[in-house]
Amino acid sequence: MANKDKLILFSIEDNVGVITLNRPDKLNAVSWELAEELAGLFYSLRDNDEVRAVVLTGAGRGFCAGGDVDWISGDTDRPMPGTSDPSRPIPRYQRKSPGGPFVDVVRQIVALEKPVIAAIHGPAVGAGLGYALACDRRFGDSTTKMSAIFTKIAMAPDCGISYFLPRLVGFSNALMLVETAKMLNAQECREIGLLDELLAEGEAYDAAVAYAKSLAQRASVAVDMARRLIHMSQTHTLEQMLDYEAAVGTMVASTLDAREGTAAFLEKRDPVYRGV
Image 1 (cartoon, rainbow, N blue to C red):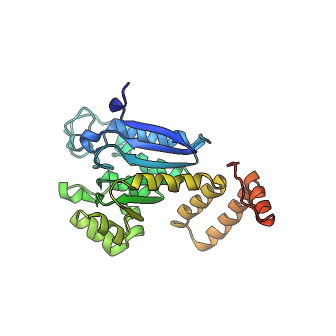
Image 2: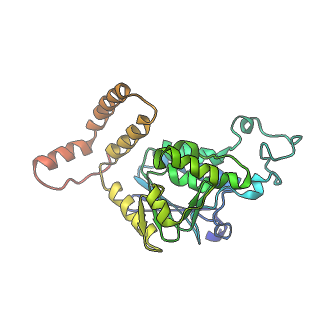
Image 3: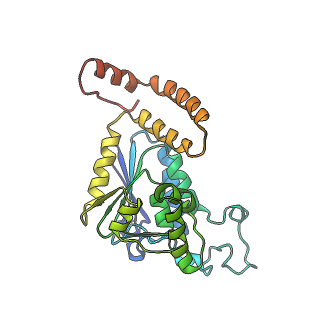
């Protein structure tokens, strides 16, 4: 099958897995099939020890233009709860989670427990914004545009927008973005906190990959568990986190990389980590 026929492209280089959304003719709008494949790929990477960090990007002119409007409209073979004819049968599991694999992608990005870096160019809106916000860090270029665009088509935020947005841009800014569906340009995205790094046009991908490779060369168990602690801290108390840190610290200290790291420090040399 030619690359143009694949919904997702995946490659590994220097322990970094690169995931490319591959519907460039649709600005990588997320279809049901693409969402299923993307969620499944993230899940499969949990126990792929060759991959120690991930870069998520899009083919063509954009990162991701959100959910495929054809499906959202309710007129495709796959029913959309709320917009499809109510007489159409909807699978039981979808009754309980209407967004199905669209929202499961966000769960799997976080649950991967490896750094996930977004390399953004062009639009990252709707579900695409949600996927970008779920990543550990966002690199954009001068073409980047971002929006919680949902109310523009009379829809409500999904794909984790309501969770991540206020944590990144603050409560008031989050309200403004979801209420107005305002499209922010690259500089505005950087100023408000949606982008962590802003580069010249065409440079975001290389910068994101370089950053991911630098993380992949570190003691990956320590990195992954540190990531887990930060995510846990969003919903736990200080006392709980102190206990979790003690437990995680004990787990990480048992790795070979921990022995190498402490030995290198004492011997005043650079450590050589193996990810174990």
